[in-house]
Structure formats: structure tokens, C-alpha cells
Image (cartoon, rainbow, N blue to C red):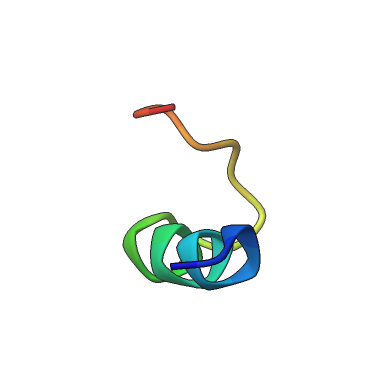
Length: 23
């Protein structure tokens, strides 16, 4: 998995416009 793919998966779990809280 590339970093870009990970970011896409994280974006699906995190609401848009909000800072990721689990990272």
C-alpha cells in the first residue's frame, strides 16, 4: 500500500474538513 492509498483510506474514515483525531 502506498502512502497515497493510505491517505485515501484515512479520508474515508475522517470527516471532510476535520483534522484526523486517530492519527
